[in-house]
Amino acid sequence: MDREKTFIAIKPDGVQRGLVSEILGRFEQKGFKLIGLKFLTPSRELAEQHYGVHKNKPFFNGLVEFITSGPVVAMVWEGEGVIGSARKLIGSTKPLEAEPGTIRGDFAVNIGRNVIHGSDGPETASFEISLWFKDSELTNWTPSDEIWRLEN
Image (cartoon, rainbow, N blue to C red; front, side, top):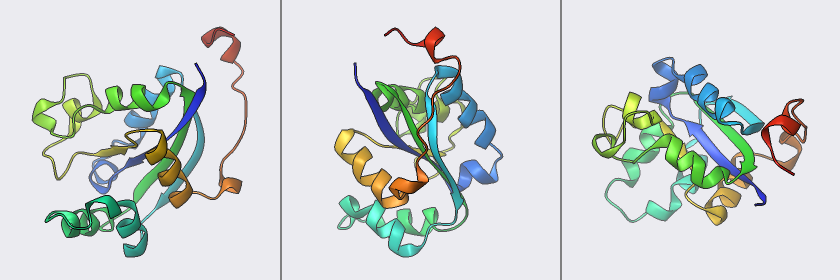
């Protein structure tokens, strides 16, 4: 399987609740490689572009207001099957449907405060990564334990 990249963001509620290290740890423990990391409060323009697919939906303004309300941890993770695996780690968008053991199942309060965002497919991941990161902000490196984790 080819290595993929995905965009993950810890939303303002996750940052405010002190869940950053817990969430980072889950991705590291799974064996994925962190290649980009930023801590920022998104601008309205960035938020509107990020949620552009929802522009004509009634909840669009609420999404934009919330994601710009405080700091976000924006990340790019790399690994085999990272997009699908990240979606499983994250859990269902609706916390009441999220399985225990997933990030949302363990920490999310409601659909509007669901702690984390993850790209839902390769095209979305590519778009979101390019929106939040310049190529020069992504680091190419090899973890020292990679030969023990990955089959060639």
